[in-house]
Length: 80
Image (cartoon, rainbow, N blue to C red; front, side):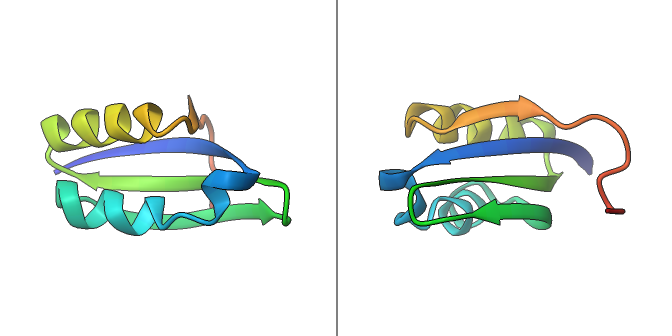
């Protein structure tokens, strides 16, 4: 199993969609939210993604296609 840490940045419209849930369901990825800050207008979420490397790549491409900004999350994101 591969693991990847990423940060998703959402706009107001994207916050209303179940993007993280759908990512896990459609691509057989375990999503673990490590940190998040959301408001009615925007937000960001740091996640650990675990699954098959190909599924993770396809899932990230799908999230990006939904207009969500995806960046790598470096360092230890479990504290803070």
